[in-house]
Amino acid sequence: MHNKTLTELSKGLRSGEFSSVELTHHFLNRIDQLDGVYNSFITVTAEQALAQAAAADQQLAKGNTPVLCGVPMAHKDIFCTEGVRTSCGSRMLDTFVPPYNATVVENFAAAGAVVLGKTNMDEFAMGSSNETSYYGPVKNPWQTQCVPGGSSGGSAAAIAARLTPAATATDTGGSIRQPAALCGITGLKPTYGRVSRWGMIAFASSLDQGGPMARNAEDVAVLLNTMASFDDKDSTCLERPVPDYTATLNAKLDGLTIGVPEQYFGDGLNPAVEQAVQDALREYENLGATIKDISLPHSNLSVPAYYVIAPAEASANLSRFDGVRYGHRCDNPQDLEDLYKRSRAEGFGDEVKRRILVGAYCLSAGYYDAYYKKALQVRRLIQQDFVAAFKQVDIIMGPTCPNPAFEFGSKGSDPVAMYLEDIYTIATNLAGLPGMSIPCGLVDDKPVGLQLIGNYFDEARMLNIAHRFQQQTDWHQLAPPSITNVSLQDESIAHANGESA
Ligand code: GLN
Image 1 (tube, protein in one colour):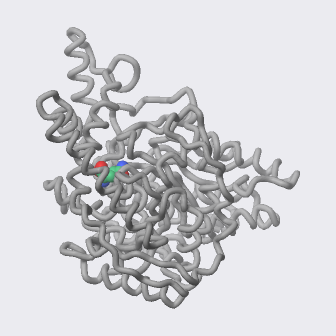
Image 2 (cartoon, rainbow, N blue to C red):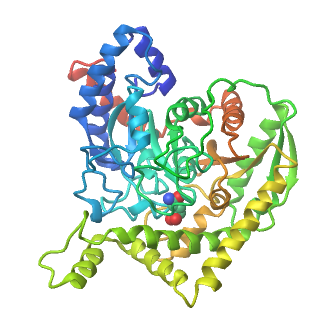
């Protein structure tokens, strides 16, 4: 069952091939047997999942249920879940149990989806490798000595390892697209404001956006139908009707113009990754698209601008973790200042502290104009590059990341090398545009991603363009070899437990 896509599972539930309780047992069993290796979950909510599945089975028996009813999924541990610990990958929130659900969590609950648990992530979503999680790194199922990407590495690895058919994720500078690329799955960061941020623990509020991950574009479209909504609890959420993202998946691509930015193919791009992307572009030509060279002249400024703006916003957002209201509190504080200092010193990891320091520095009176204000001006130039580009082309394509997954520890001592992982993804967040990563090849036996950048609110078109590619290619169907081996063993465990696989 775990090799089926979300859409196939939904059909199987409706045709009575299996029940939601059986399906949920199957995935919980896989998590139990396999996640000791991958560490993709921080919390598994088995009891609650089985109760949700039983309720879904009753709904399914009545018929006419939402497409996600009874389908198992997972939430990134950045989304608040009522009664279930929400850690954000940090010691600071190790014991935090929210009294409410994020809007995104509510949306999936209302659709009858079954939540298997909460996925591992970089601490407060700061990172590109999952190495900053308080709960230890996630292993890439393709090669376990390599990182899964970050910060949504738990969600991506869990899908790649067939521990869940789908998961939620968030993307502030690339955290949906980069792990999707490194784990060989499909992930979409919507237009800023398309998905509610309410109950999603804030990192950099003007950049953060939740989005879905799954094995293919069709499943991502199904998920986005439920995940996107207008929410008056999030003042930056836009009041626009949510289209049916599955309706136009099969539209023809004749007449499509794809912009290929020269800046995305320069120094630092692995030649084999470049080749995979070029091959994908040829495939699009076969599908009727025209390729057009474009320029995004301020691309080289996106990483520096981001590493002023994101830490500045993070330093403000993370000031709420003071040891008083919730989160970690140090033992035996001497006075209020000692309480603040030690609670924060103990609760936050190194990367989070680095960002708070950088952010507070950039926002300080003497440096605000030189750094923060300047970064905002650069952000506007980057956004204007895209506005100009979308006057000439329908969609932009390039690599998601410069390289396939790297080994643990290989960038640990050099934050800048790590920051360059997001060189092709960050500009999209600065501009607020939707972006997507779909598998387009293997380099050194590891997956690499093709990035699609769409115009504002053009997710339906982007999903159509991704889906057409996935009808022609099978990169998205490849499973990590280690999974294929271990799953055989898992089948025998499942059979021994009297379950059908
Ligand atoms: N890797 C980037 C960072 O560390 C982006 C993270 C994200 O998108 N959450 O800030």
